Image 1: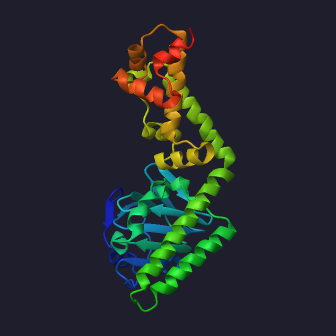
Image 2: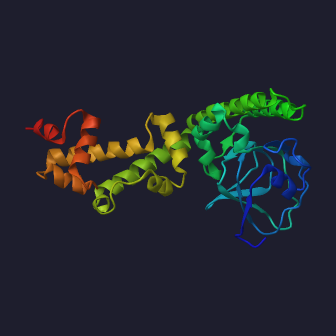
Image 3: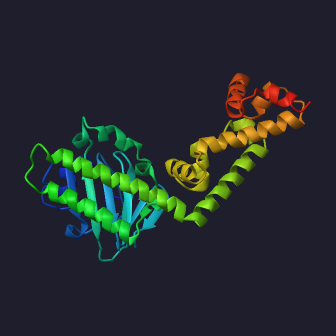
Amino acid sequence: MPNGQLLRIKTITEYHRVMELPKPEHPLISLINLETITREAGDEPVNLVFDFYSISLKRNSNIKFKYGQQQYDFDEGVMFFISPGQVFGIEVEKGATIKRSGWILLVHPDFLWNTPLAKTIKQYEFFSYSVHEALFLSDKEETMILGIMQQIDQEYRSNIDKFSQGLIITQIELLLNYSDRFYNRQFITRKITNHKLLERLEDILSEYFSGDTISKKGLPTVQHIAEALNVSPNYLSSMLKTLTGQSTQQHIHDKLIEKAKEKLSTTSLTVSEIAYELGFEHSQSFSKLFKSKTNVSPLEFRHSFN
């Protein structure tokens, strides 16, 4: 495949065929031991997109995975999650013998149709994290995840009956909930890295609000802040919620209100002029946000200093 070409894999059966595996036991779900994949990788990097969910537990792999400009070598036991339509790349060092270890769970959205998980799965924000934001597992956590995957595998390979789908979905939901818990733990335990992100966030917001950038470009978006920090928007908001109790958008608004208070108390600018300088097209929108954050209007706040 030419470098940069996108390969779209629409079905789990197609994935098995591409990877030279036997047909899946079920067309809408598959659990694969990566050591059973013997297909040789090509010399050129490949960009892929699936039309189904992929949940991987990988370790000791010499395959490099890439989302956008972010690349990561999976040398430890880690998990990462791919949602339908998400583009990612794989690359193997030229001349290297490919090593694979771990499991990959593939779930087509149709398998979840008309179940509560069909809606709630979209609430697990780690499906849109970047590759360098993978979930690093402790030995105990890895054992627990493997235990759930083995339960799924056992049910998957049993005779399919009316209980099979419900039991498998229950295990998938358990897997996702534990992954959510372990991500929350990771946000807390990786304090040095995350607090550096917090410091950089504060610096970026301070710089953005200190010049005339905001009056020219408007309020910074969550996407803009995440790109400046080199993380995905959902990962940033999840981390901030865990460490500070507030989302990225709330941090942006807090910095905005801080700057508004400064202008209201130290300048004679009108509320409309301040609103314009802070990136608002309409002063009413600014006043509404200010009051929602402070319980007083901008004029009431200014008058409190007189």
